[in-house]
Image 1 (cartoon, helix red, strand yellow):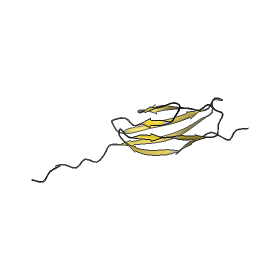
Image 2 (cartoon, one colour):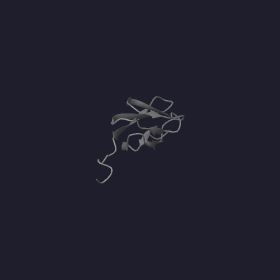
Image 3 (tube, one colour):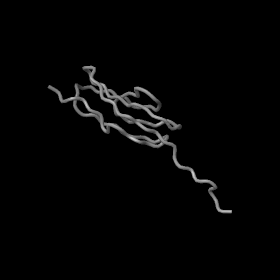
Image 4 (cartoon, helix red, strand yellow):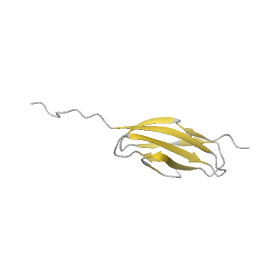
Length: 88
């Protein structure tokens, strides 16, 4: 008997264009990561998520071979830009 499938973390806030590594525990191997909704890309085998160039939200999902799923809510924010960049 395998432990219940879980994704870590259950939620994440990330800056545009940043990369974050999601993890998973339990479930029936092999596990596969995907972007269920929203934007960004993820490596299905490693869980390495790359945020898009624009802000928004996404749901990252891990699925095991038995069809069980676990989701993580991702908030994507744009970096703060201060203008002017030089002093007059």
